[in-house]
Length: 116
Image 1: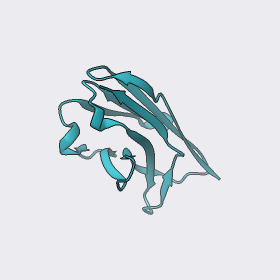
Image 2: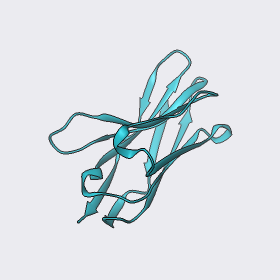
Image 3: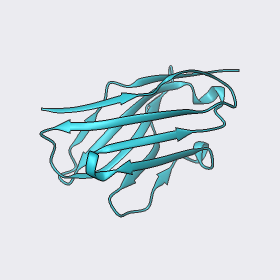
């Protein structure tokens, strides 16, 4: 059984910052990449940032220069530092872990609300 758990969401004013954390645990095969996705009301889930092992980090254009993803590979943990938050960043943020077999594991999500 694999568990992926996010934390760190909440309510913040526009221009503020939040840091999301996620840990993957359990019978998870070797992780290939970890990342963050988000889903705003009435919209499809979209990639925010992803960091593969030894590869280049990929960010959505809308968050480049404001969000930073980082990982602790030894702890199967990924973080998302979000600065200069905007109202359009309001969404449920989901953590994703992908193993070398390309199996995807998802957390239940954490809500980020940015008030203008």
